[in-house]
Image 1 (cartoon, rainbow, N blue to C red):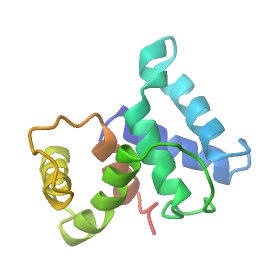
Image 2 (tube, rainbow, N blue to C red):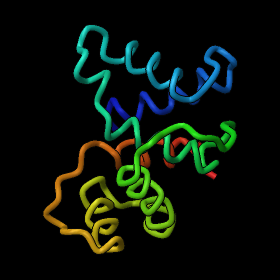
Image 3 (tube, one colour):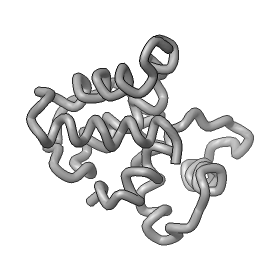
Image 4 (cartoon, rainbow, N blue to C red):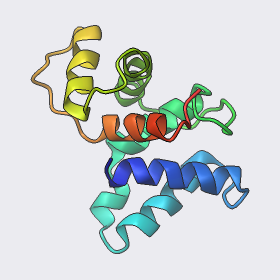
Length: 129
């Protein structure tokens, strides 16, 4: 798994341990810790929106449903990935991405931007419900 997946796990821990008041603040803190001085990596919107979309929908253990993101597409990608991953847990990130794109009738050539890393890592750490 990659750094954005690890950031999602860290953000979840920060929130559930009461160290951050909401998932967006937890994500910001986790990415600051993960990426130190790399501001573009800290601000990367696609994995953040995927994570917050899962949180918003109540799929991340320990995080209540809420209004955490304005994202439409990245949230949709993450939500579509969950049942696909549950039925085929050995899919790698690219394989999962292709199945999500096919499921959503999007061009398979569309490039992913770490959204599946977030979903796969949360899934592998048993943080999705």
